[in-house]
Image 1 (cartoon, rainbow, N blue to C red):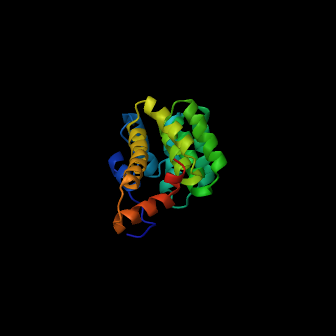
Image 2: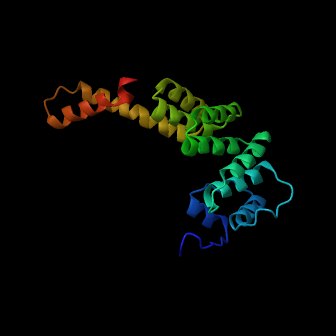
Image 3: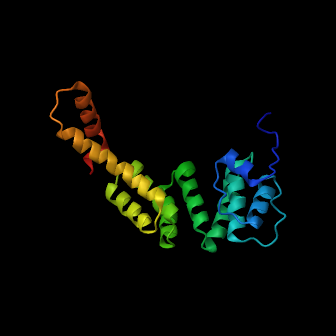
Length: 196
């Protein structure tokens, strides 16, 4: 099968598997819309709600053979007008991954965070950790998401703390073992350790 062969999706699980999308929280209507949209039937719907704008935006971002980012942005912005945190996160991810416009990305994540989007908190925390190396802001966002009982934030902060604890433990070992000394040097070169 070549890249131009049209795939017909029979259910949302097929779409989810192919594009690694989370479809757990979609209701029956949204699932039906998603199947139609990803099968290329994007003008059947009538009145659009924020979920529909998001689904069509996903179509233009992931599936459409000729990616149409302008159309995708237009649809996400319509969903954002309806206070869709999902659209804010999706558009922020586009600005981060495709345009690498971090100012617009932050603006959208912060807007979603104002609406208590733990996904935006996690995404912006990861940005602060990996791109800006601002570990204070990273920790602040993870802790805010943890206050909302978000498991992903707990896991992400736990990984970060584990690295720090491992460094402290290894550093306190009085050893001439080359493997231990090499690990200490690796950790000391890490921006994570130096900024803790």
